[in-house]
Amino acid sequence: MSLYPLARFVTSAAEPGQLTVDAGREVAFTGRSNAGKSTAINALTGRHQLARVSRTPGRTQLINFFELAPERRLVDLPGYGYARVPDAVRERWSRLLSAYFERRASLRGLMLIVDARRGLAAPDLMMLDWAGGPARGRAAHVLLTKADKLSRSQALKVEREARAQLAGREVGVQLFSAPARLGVEEARAVLERWLAG
Ligand code: GDP
Image (tube, rainbow, N blue to C red; front, side, top):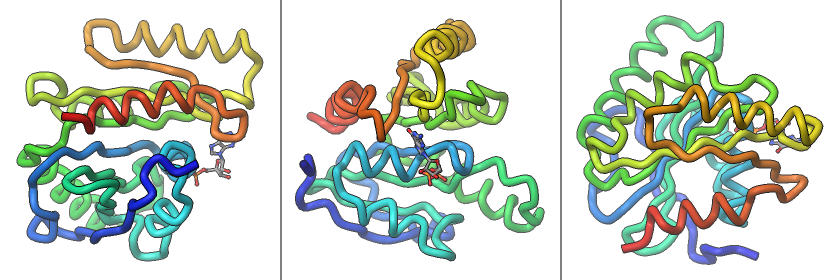
């Protein structure tokens, strides 16, 4: 069932001047490429075409804005960690994200998508720091995706390790699997809490 029956794609931004109006509340999704971001967005919103838009060739390096409800947005940030991205692209991406994280008043929370088999790595922690954290009124939550590919005990170990790595930061961590429907309600509750108010 769709939690957000009126969800729709609004626009993509390739440069800071193209960001949508900064009003209301929004939650951004980020993660290393292939970590399961599109799958998580689909599972959480119940709207399959949202992530499909973000995957359209040419849009993967853009910031994609979706309206879930009036003045409530989901923002799909470009995946990171591609080894073979030309420097010019990396630089443009970095300028765009810096502008977004530095100025965006409506950004309330960051959903960080991490493949549980890889665990939290340096680029993931950098993204958390870059986004700003509680000092800027922003919460963060890590979804350890593809938990169905690990045994229960392996998955719990990954979760424990992630918590240890995040000690001292106010960041939630949970296991997640779209196909196994593991952690979907928990993650939805976080998303809804951030968007409420
Ligand atoms: P993105 O690049 O981060 O948007 O990643 P995708 O959502 O496209 O997922 C990358 C691949 O991982 C796809 O083949 C997905 O079907 C698969 N995948 C994503 N999430 C899960 C999950 O929770 N469990 C399993 N088994 N596969 C997943």
